[in-house]
Length: 227
Image 1 (cartoon, rainbow, N blue to C red):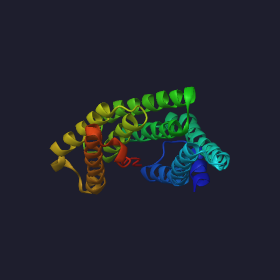
Image 2 (image 1 turned 30 degrees about the vertical axis):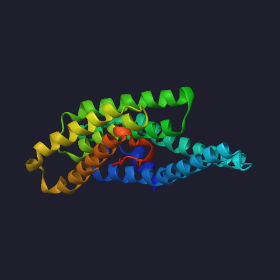
Image 3 (image 1 turned 120 degrees about the vertical axis):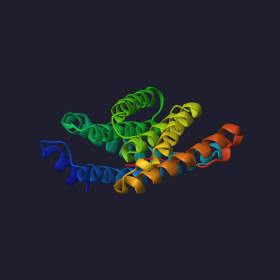
Image 4 (image 1 turned 135 degrees about the vertical axis):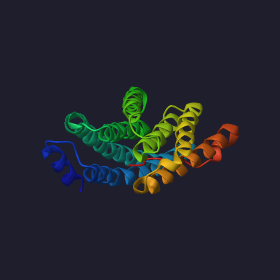
């Protein structure tokens, strides 16, 4: 599916349609999602092996490095497609926000497994992309699912990558409270998507607030990564 969407994106002379954008997002999410999950499991096991002085640590390390190579290749593929093909053709505000959010997402994914200067660079690029998306998102309705999805993922970036719980909560709370105030303006078409994202924003706020009260070690991962 990824190959098919790359072909469509590179051959199109205009910006992608809504359906094409969503298919592109799903295609890449499918290939990177399983590997991100695998990386978390392997990384956790490697830490456990290291703590125990296990002889298996060199095997675990090799698996982790293989998964990281695959993750990096996926991120490079979509980021090149965004920078060289999709964003230059983007005209509508929806498209610009959607694509810059994707750019922020995949630099965020790269930051998850990178270290040192590579992690710093990925985090900086992710922040710039999210900020650009947020700037264009001001032109969309507060309750628009793409705008809400951006706020959700941007807040997760603040929390997980920058370790800034205060800014993460602020980003999520502003988006949630603003959308609640405009709930009666939601169109029937976007009602389901918007309310689902609002619930995720609220769930994360609850999680992060409890974390801030000293429960961080036992809390679950935040919810995010909406297309």
